[in-house]
Each structure stands twice: as C-alpha cells, then as structure tokens.
Image 1 (cartoon, rainbow, N blue to C red):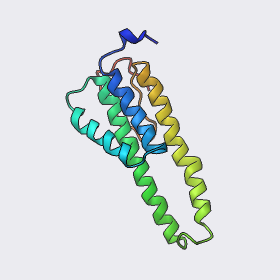
Image 2: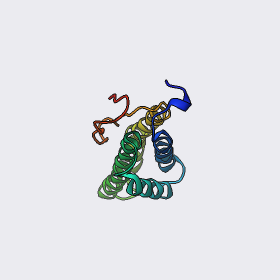
Image 3: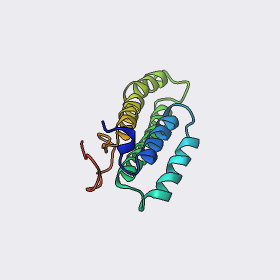
Image 4: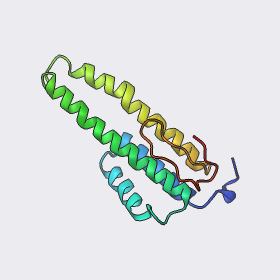
Length: 137
C-alpha cells in the first residue's frame, strides 16, 4: 500500500463513496443513498478514474440493494403477507445471504479505496474504467 501522500487522485472521493455506501446499508438508508447518488451525478464524467470506479460500484451496489429489498417485500406479500408463516424465513434468508454479501463488498471496497486501488464488486458491480490505477479484480 502506498503512503497516504502518494495516493492517486480521487482517493478521497472514492473513500467517501464507499463509506456512504456502507452508511446506506447499515445506518441511514435512503439519506446516504441520496448523497451517493448526488456524488455520482456530480462526478460521473469528470472525476479521477479511481473515484469514478468507486462511485460506479457504490451506485450499482446501492441500486441492487434497493431492488433486492423491493423483491423481498413482494415475495413476502405473495407468500401471505407480513403476518404469514414464511415472513421470517424470507427476511432471515435475505439478511443472511444478500444484505451481508453487499456489506462485505462495501467493506472490501472501502479498504481498496483507502489503498488507492480500483475494485469491482462481484455479481453486482459495473466494469472498471480502463485507466483505473492498479486495476485489479
């Protein structure tokens, strides 16, 4: 890992995006997503490659997280509603597999951003820019 004074341009924005992604999943859902979406919209074309890569990953991950929540709620309603016998099976399965996977992706993405490296979220991530520093999968 390079010393902090040798981090590539965009490392601070990349770290901020990853931290906000985790905040969206764990602390302030919705509000943190709006900040991630605003940062992505504002910097999607002109930011340094490292920042663009992490902004794209966090935006894609956030959209997947929101979409999965909608799907889980539809499944719960179709299986008998929130008082139905399958509600907790669906909720526990979602949190065990989907939500925890997205949190692990965000934690690893945060570590990569802090190290000044690009990283693509498996399964839900967007392709990395070709000019990304220390491009690794």
